[in-house]
Length: 395
Image (cartoon, rainbow, N blue to C red; front, side, top):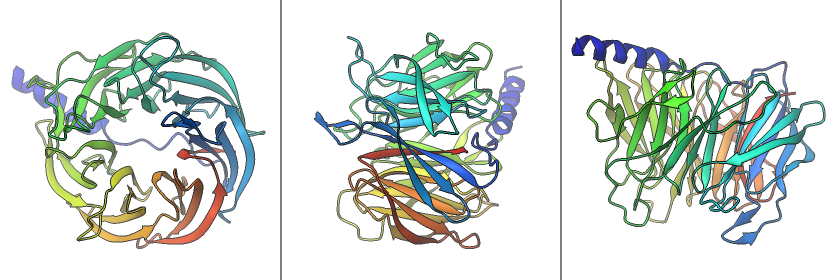
């Protein structure tokens, strides 16, 4: 019976990790681009007031500023609900209304004006929330709290308001060897699988991708610890420091970005329901000796290419994906056009890549060659104080 149960679980895991089309589906070729920022860094105010909005033309690549969409504190990561009526932001804080926590703010989205109206805000149940996403039904928000080492789930009402947390879990497991960065668990990413049966959590402090069971009816994360042999996870080499991850277009392979060692680890989904490491490849040039931390990872909409960003080397790395083996081959690295490329976004058609250079205070645009994945710089298209996250929404 145990064998049958594990076989069923493995089949469900493989099927449900298949990615669905993104929430921001094209209604033509015009989009809004919302930019999350830091309004305060290391105790000092930046020039940013919150979330900024732009109009983007997919054909011409033109980016036109609208202005401040909403004033809010440290909206470092954004997510848009299915239907494009609501936008959610984490407020990356260590203290929120007397709690050791950050915040989560809900906004109504006016696509005609490119403005956001605040609906409400709640505690994130952990300090320094750094990632936010929605489940595939759009009924729940999922938040990763970096300093708090916790992940939380919140129900969303039909009018976009956020309810009390339906689940809060502290990541558990053996810490990594980096004493400065891996002194405890540090949840850095959380998203559900395509079928909403699992929630994937990258924990930088534990060198693991934890895989929680997810109940899409109640918003509960499955109980269990990372040391439980029946608790599904993917283990990375000590000191990797997993940050974000992406799946291949068929869901058979998982690509995990190592923030600390600037690598991509490729995992294959085995028949027994486990993820097996099959490749680890550097995103840095050979002989690089400076300081660098990797930040963002994304698979091109055509499934043929993968992109990552390097902070320190200040570059975007381009990899080709072997669709059969899942393995990566480096294509090129290109300068990001600014300092500290924290995040980048590919437009829904995969024609352009926009890089947010946090310390450079700018957004730089690249065109993408559909046959090679190579990037050609268009140049700086926007000046934004401390940009951290870019999100496309159909206009």
